Length: 378
Image (tube, rainbow, N blue to C red; front, side):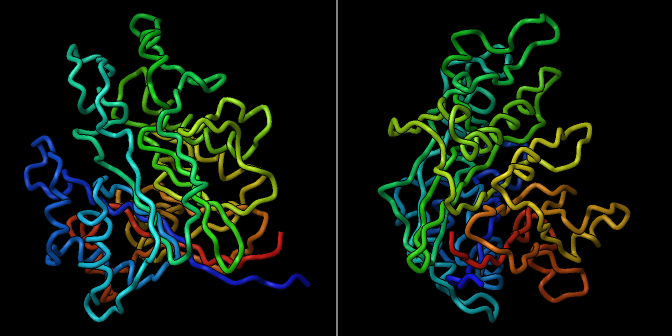
């Protein structure tokens, strides 16, 4: 029998810590700096609840989606650590993450084009490289109890959508022509935020955190530009894992070409904005990962709170968002891991901790998802 190498809890959580989330007037265009200002104090109830959820679940590694990018870590991620996670919240013990990774994202980064066809090239909203009203909105942060191999991180911020062979280029059904002009198509970036490969060293063993947050497959028109982009953002990871000829087009921001080496440990993390089921709005694009030969998608994290939230839907126990879908995933490699368990942090209305998820303003419209993984020899 193989000797186990240690265990760890890996999680993902869309925390809704972006500027628009804190506005009382939802019709107002969000502005940058909101999260920065809130993190300079320790008294925001929503952020305190986010911190408490992390302290209750206590993941060893966690990806936070929709954490606005703040270039100065002392004002951003370190302020969150020091003023919230390092402080006990409502009887929960403080938690520390000595290592983190944060980097720029495409959301809110201005493009020079009228990408949403509203007649104005504003550089904001639908005209940014990834939807956002200011640079860094809907960013990402990885927190880790274990050392990060920063020298070997790969990011795919700049990778062009057109570089992907067989990319699903949107077509305007009214004209039969490409939604994007040739110039726009050659310039448009694939990742709506970014795609990160972050090597982490756990008890002398190496694993890769593959982190992303693809665009929602909605909020578009009959051209389905967001649905097609969501599919191809997920396909990027499928090609990255397949390697070989499938990954030749994958050139990271440092100029390194190709996919992930075979027979290594990895965990895919993030709000994938895709459900396994096919619906009017969902194409099941995440199945590219769930059914990938290198991915162990057999374990489905569930909660009693999700089942209670939509009692007439059989799949509700696996929902990770209040809008009734499984959207957030922790997907480990078959190689180098066994799965001990996992879940979705979604207490029922009868439980005291329901106060942490009672509404979007309590914490987020998403729920934290985790897996307990046992490291095994490769």
